[in-house]
Length: 108
Image (cartoon, rainbow, N blue to C red; front, side):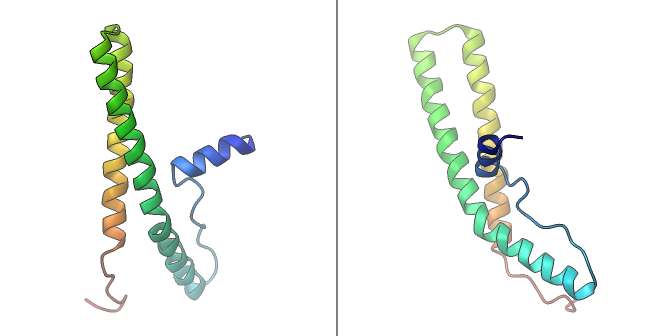
């Protein structure tokens, strides 16, 4: 994968963001805490990016319908817009869930 493609992938999706757990129990816990902190830090970024892209695609779809572009072109735009809206909703839910307080591991 080229470096520009990996930058786009990293900017648009949380691919390769977290570390794989390795080692003993204490290192596993430290890796989990670090991964959660990384997600807490990056999820608002992904929400903003996909929110802006969904908004721009919605405006483009309104313009396409207003201009009377062919149906297949409107359909492709609608599918892309639905995908962006879905990513926006999923990342918003994850960002909100990551902000919830986490009880201690021994708490029942």
